Figure (tube, rainbow, N blue to C red):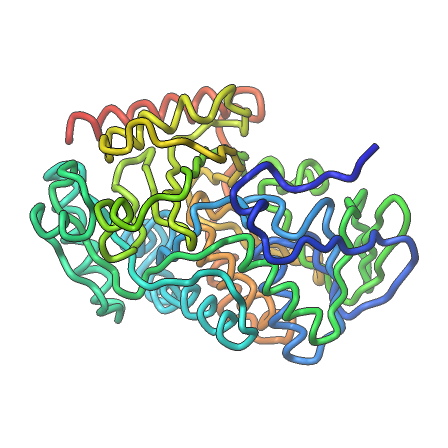
Amino acid sequence: MSAPSHTTSYYAASANDKNIRPALTSHVEADVCVIGAGYTGMSTALHLAESGFKVVVVEATRIGFGASGRNGGQIVHSYSRDIDFIEKHYGKDTGTEMGKMAFEGGRIIRRLVKDYNIQCDLKDGGIFAACNDKQMRELESKKALWEAHGHKDLELLSAAGTQDYVGTDRYHGALLDKSGGHFHPLNLVLGEAAGFESLGGVIYEDSPVTRVEEGTKAKVFTDKGSVTADFVVVAGNAYLGGLIPKLQSKAMPCGTQVITTEPLSEAQQKALLPHDQCVEDCNYLLDYFRLSGDGRLIYGGGVTYGAREPGKVESLIVPKMLKTFPQLKGVRVDYAWTGNFLLTLMRLPQFGRIGSNIYYAQGYSGHGVTCSHLAGKVLSDAIQGQAERYDVFASLPQYPFPGGTTFRIPYTAMGAWYYNLRDKLGI
């Protein structure tokens, strides 16, 4: 049987590094064993290696196989629930501390790209687009909220002003975040992996973990080997499966779909996104899009609850793309794929410990690009004895979905239908 590889995405086809790392076939020791070579795992491993730790990463399939190598490639700050929600539900102090970290993930990405010369088509600027007047008022509130927490690189755009950035008359206005941005997500995590290896780190692919044994020194087992370590970091997220049952019940995998067009002419690119910035709208089931480094339009959106594979991604996403850019009718779609992210009930990330030396971070709820990089830094600090920031996240309650694994999908889909209807009605 052939080894599992990446999904048939534009990102996989244009990956800078197609080398396959060996599987774990022996028994090794390390200071830290990281399970999962996505953004959370690689950010953690790289930060620890920079501090002199001996780190081993075990990956079930390929580096960036999951959401880290399939996402929209956008730097979007804060969390899936914003700072005001956190303050309201968990207190002013928690909101203040999480507000201090809400814009750090993007800075971490830019620092790693610079320090390790990662070639991932990183470009500046992101836009939140309002589909109705209610959403525009919410963007005004978001600007005030973020500025109150120290984030100043923001500008409100009128409907006409938005058309200077996005070639459509669909939007009622927008919020321009000059410190947002976009990049090739798989090449980012592959570059982080190369940076980690340059510091002596070791990555094993094709090495699914079969069990984790707690103890003074924890032990991570695969079919053909094991890692004994002082600390373990569980970073499988939506692709963790049932490895840690107590984590499986706290979150639900969900799928999102993405397409990539054929390369567009320079004139087409300028007509769609004149300033080459990324865009996401403000709907509950949002659309997001940007140009690739070689001039294709990457367009994603929608959610399938329970991570079901859609029968035909193009049939779901092309109508969304043409609603935004009808001028693209007839443009060829070269790539289409789906990927899973991990949704939590409160749509806030879940950090915690199992015993004293097994750490986890998961459930970014569609907001994982920046938060996962932040998680890696915070996890690294916690393992080094500076756990204050980690404990802010770990203090958030972690509720299971109502209805258990049987009913969580229909319950969540019903909720999404309700919010989607509100978006369409503008209420």
